[in-house]
Length: 244
Image (cartoon, rainbow, N blue to C red; front, side, top):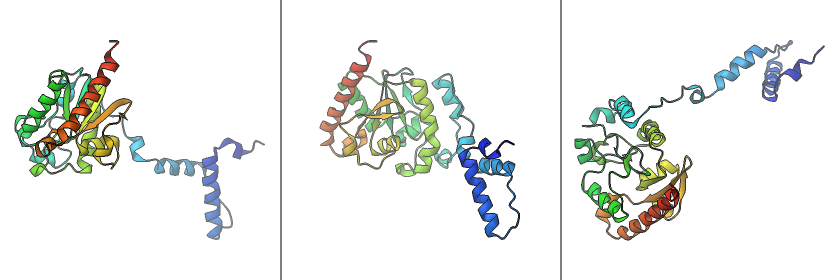
């Protein structure tokens, strides 16, 4: 007779032994082991996330934007004026990621169009880029009330949208603008000052961190730091694209 124990994997065997011990401790005279029951229990213990369907993939940024533009998955969808998807070159070599739309962005439906956006344009020009050369997006697609910081649950809901943008654009480099986007993308609480000056990685893509342009409007001393960061970015970009 074939030993049935040789037909089951170690995890199932451990579950059977545990079930037997529990029945014996309860005073059961006969120990009943059902492999069907064990399989059903193991399936129930499988995290729901692993059973979820794969996210929908789109053929273009335009198609993606049209599909998610009416999103109401979080309360911000009810308070926004316009959904702020992103702007720029759909085949951009560099993707800039901020935190969330502000008042001007919410009104116009385009990221970085206020004073911080004007400063970002100057930063781009300093390293021979324009808004049309790169792509600009945010962690959130809707403006938080009173420009408060994005909440973790809001970013978790919006992250798949950004991930699809990354997949479609296929940038050579990602630049996180500001503490919130940097910490969210890198899944860390490390202060932005310690995240700067070194290269990180996001899903296999080189990622660099610098201060948000809005911070430069408040603290001019950051301008030199940002200049150093974007020069690093430009040098890396030239290195990665030199053979293209």
